[in-house]
View 1 (cartoon, rainbow, N blue to C red):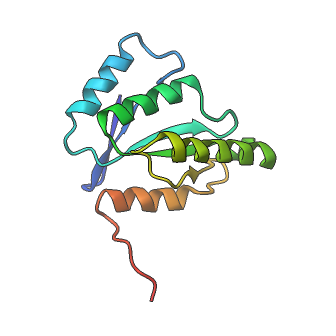
View 2: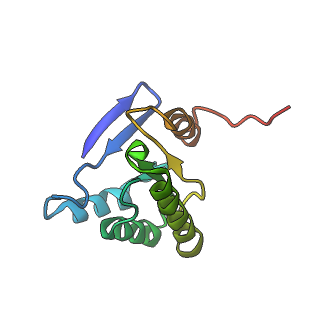
Length: 139
């Protein structure tokens, strides 16, 4: 796990390697961390926008649901998917979230680090859930 202090506002914890080439004790380490963190505001599950939900994503969702941890799904690499494939994956994930989850934020975030699309909205959401950006009603 990698810890990144974001100014004095919050700490971002990155858990690379989940699923693909994960160490043997990775699942136990993540489970213990998630269950013990009382100040955990939200978990962000990164899903490859080209391939959609994989078996490891379903396992992660199952764990988050079991522990009652609020989470958000972020579709990454959207610049690499054709529009038709991206639409197919988005619709499948939305249907999954609607029918099979309780703790998942209903809005998917679609991002591309290459084109920077969707990143600003995701950053605003992170700032909001960490108490650093209040939502303002339109006047």
